[in-house]
Image 1 (cartoon, helix red, strand yellow):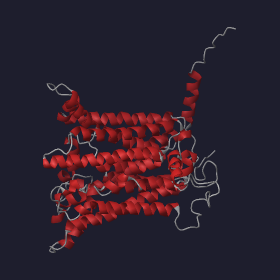
Image 2 (cartoon, rainbow, N blue to C red):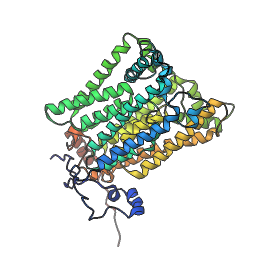
Image 3 (cartoon, helix red, strand yellow):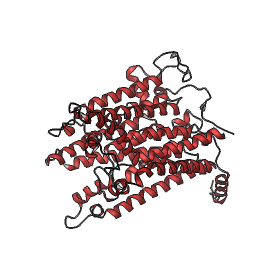
Length: 510
């Protein structure tokens, strides 16, 4: 029997209210009078049937726009490009978007990959050129026009629109839990890092890919949506590689649900999309196109990573006369690469086993979060804006305010410490001991690991999953939503239960 999750477990179609369902929010609500009462107006009115203007959806979208506007104000001291006295660090307003307009020679009219190697995947390079070359053309011969500032503001506008699209997708996926999207809208990470780089391009495409998969179902239309999900995830992977990781959870969940053809279709269209997007740069400009792969292959341990923390501990507590293991890895980058990939691969195998052996088929967002989090935990590079990768996945995987805010607090601490480290490196005078930065990086790492543990716990104990209390199965599952497990899994479970020895009776005396 199908358990499609649209109407929810109780079948009422009523929206979730965080002040009643989330213990952390319920506790905070005591400051303003307590949780929503039983007789509140329209408390259980279905989403979309509200008769007032300021609905939950409109409030969340407005909050997103407010956060992005505040982010623009926070970055405004750097917009003119006149970075003197390390203003970009002392005012926390550095952005690659402005710096790379000049570093990638867009200000000279250089076409990405054709005229200059680009350190990013191709769709990000195309995006830079699509916005940067018109700005250069408009400013060429016009010395009064600050091209860098125009370029940044144009990027901020488009990336901000992609952030709004991401929130709209979350709202579409959680129609009965619209306040979940407020986690994304009010996240300090969005406020501080939205336009540090072009990550929102990949995030918006990945979100749309998840939405296409979630809307898939039986029949020709469902097949087209599955293919579309692959195209969108492929485009996201051509902008930043991580959206391709979502295809792994789709595959393993489809295997458990005996819907493997749909997963292969999505993976196939994603692969074709990545190839087609790369070909225009890879064939005629191979050396310039290869810059991204060369940089990632030769790059040593970067700031704030698990490996950086280990290298610091080697130097702090190891034998000064010998080289510690993390210090050795920093000097032997090929081995570091293999070890990083191997640990990520083992983590993915563990996540796959969890997906197949869990008492109930996990939700897609839960597995997607675990895979991307595992990549960041074991990666040798963890840039400040990578926090944005996890943001929509956390909202969809575990919409709980308490742990989310703890994680965001750790990210803010790291953000501040990171800029202190940048300032110290720029001036040659440390702002604080390196141990302070390592401690902030450790807090961030611990917070992400804690979220991983919480998500794994809810997979093993699905009755603790907040989303499953509102939806019967997986609102992101698409054609997998409500589908029973494959017969081979049922047979394996039956055989396993038969093979388990019966408990030996214990003799008692009276």
